[in-house]
Figure (spheres, rainbow, N blue to C red):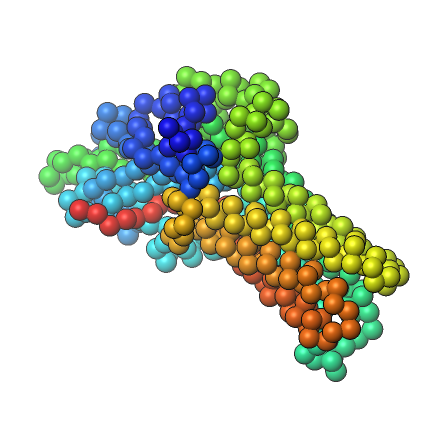
Length: 414
């Protein structure tokens, strides 16, 4: 059997969870681990005693559904998200929150981006750092490109000082730190099969008919993201419904690991799309930071052209290529196969915009060494400009994603 068609027994996140059964498991590449699984919810057997109808959520915030499935994605699992996939039907017996694509839900999450700062959540930290790093790069793009389109607005040190310092801050302080956190996030994926939803049974007063209701619930969440007591560490609670403890699932016996074991790298992580993508991002950012250092005033203006080609422009080409590889792999991770785009998945769009940003930064590095050619220099500056803004789009979407821990997706069905 292809590796992407089934979880390995020791890495099956839902092996001991009674209320779910896997119906579909797949991934885009046969030699890598699964990235998507649809899990059927056996709600009736696990529903609690009936609640009175006064506890029912309002119709404005809920919708009856005929069928609900838990949608496991490797990306969502890393980010501490618990997506639910529901099929619309007028005769539905399960009540779920309204879709997260609903305008009210979108506005609620957007408002949280300005008012909620969960610094204990590593996924939020990554998105927040990349957002500010992208803003710095957008400022750098103005310093690089404005002299070509508005020469009259030039000021002393605009390109050398303004462009050099913002390049150093963006490359070394933001992209590199964010990429390191991406690696920590990848090696600390949740392995205990966190469901993240509460099942309640409701009784309608008029008809006496019972209905089941699904509501977001982090009370038994085994992800480390809700733990407010420390920035890095174990989950907020241990899932007592899982016979395998979190400690038993860690290769080094801890609930948080800084570095995976050699055996884990060989047998699991080098077959995990999310880890490979994070590693590519980290390598690209590390090499790109060389260009950030050599962009500083006092260094950049004292290099010969051959030296600049080797330690300033070449790191941009190699580092940008790492961003392209990373964005491509992150896109693949959300797809059911390698050739079908996942337009309905937010993570796919995040990866897409980061891919475009990587192309922009790589083009800048490739065109930069053409000294004395005004057209090439113009296009190099322009590539930095639009590449920075596409990185910003991807980072803002990632910040939105990090605050939406219980997405509800709706598909049409009979």
